[in-house]
Structure formats: C-alpha cells, structure tokens
Amino acid sequence: AQTVTQSQPEMSVQEAETVTLSCTYDTSESDYYLFWYKQPPSRQMILVIRQEAYKQQNATENRFSVNFQKAAKSFSLKISDSQLGDAAMYFCAYRRRSGNTPLVFGKGTRLSVIA
Amino acid sequence: DAGVIQSPRHEVTEMGQEVTLRCKPISGHNSLFWYRQTMMRGLELLIYFNNNVPIDDSGMPEDRFSAKMPNASFSTLKIQPSEPRDSAVYFCASSLRLTVAGYEQYFGPGTRLTVT
Image 1 (cartoon, rainbow over the protein chains, first blue to last red):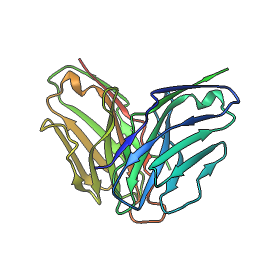
Image 2: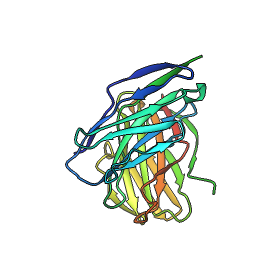
Image 3: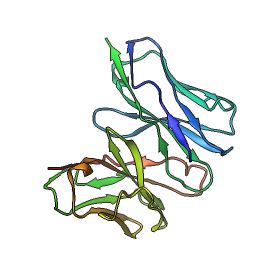
Image 4: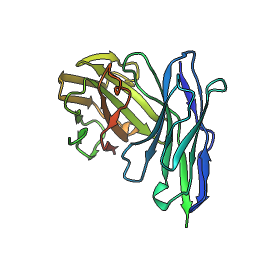
C-alpha cells in the first residue's frame, strides 16, 4: 500500500521569507502523480501544485515550487516570498496514474506566517 | 460551474440518530470520492465511485456507514446509528476519469459532523 509521510507537524516562516515543507512517500508504482493541497481555516481543500512522476522537471506555480526526487521518493514544497495568506495546513498527496484512483494523504503540516 | 456541492455544511446530532450527508459532483465528472478528516487519522478515503458504481469501500469503518450514488449528479453518505467517534469533517470530491486533465480531484466545502 502507498503511504505518504510529512515529518513536520508545524512550521513557521517570517513574511517575505522562504520556507520548505517536506514530504516522503512509499510506492512500488513507477507512474503516479503527487500533489500539494492547502487547507485554510475555511477548510476548503485547494490544489497548490501537482507533479507527474514521469516528468523530470520540477513543477512551479508562481511562488510555489517543488523539489521532486523520484529515486529518494521525496517531494518537498518551497514557498517563496511568504505571505500572510499562505498560513494554512498543507497536505502532500499521492495518486496512482492508472485509472482514477483516490488520493493518499500525509498527515499535514501547519504553516504559520509571522508578520 | 458551481463546483462540488455538499449539504449540510454543519450537522449536530445526538448519538443513535441517523445522519445523511449529500454531495452533488461537478457536472460531467464521472468519479466521486468520499473522504473523512479527523485530528487523529487525518484525511482518509471512505469510498469511491466510477460511473456511479462503487469501486472501493474498504475505508468504510463499519456497517453503520453506507453510501449510494443513484445517478451521476448525486451521492449520499449515511451513518446509522451515529456515534460520537463519527464526529469529523466529511469531504466529497469529484473528477473526470481517463482524460489528460482527469488527475485533479475537486473538493467540496466539507460537512462538519458533530455527534453528541
């Protein structure tokens, strides 16, 4: 079974600084997707960024980028120029590529942004 | 598009009562997922459907939980009888299967269930 591990229950960052959230996963599959979701206090799940495992290039979305290390099964999220609105729970998630299968989530990292 | 719609947004009930949570997926989506979020267990899959057919219900905690998808635009998750340990946020998500863009799941706002 696939598992996703987020080893940092809580992180904090100064406004305008950069922070990196860690995620590791375990799978025997070779083709899959990885995601970072943001959950603000409103509890809405918001997709931040996604990575296809077959792509070597790391995904970027504005201030958000990932460091995808397939051999190490590592998928970290870097947030640059942190803003107060970035404060939220962040979940790393995995999904097999074949079919339309469910997401497997990590336990989450609570990010605080200090003004 | 209105997105995934869930109702009610909040539900408070007494132990032993029947609870029904509802979900309307995004029009045209043919996969639907029910997740539960608790502090202890995080986000976990309860059940999912493809083309209205249940594919995997191994996450349903016990027989007190049941889910149906009578048509492509509606699904229910029922708990009978409810217990305090069922208190959680229940999310519904939908996606479009077998397309290039079909890897993204769109989440509803969730239903916060409190069983006293």
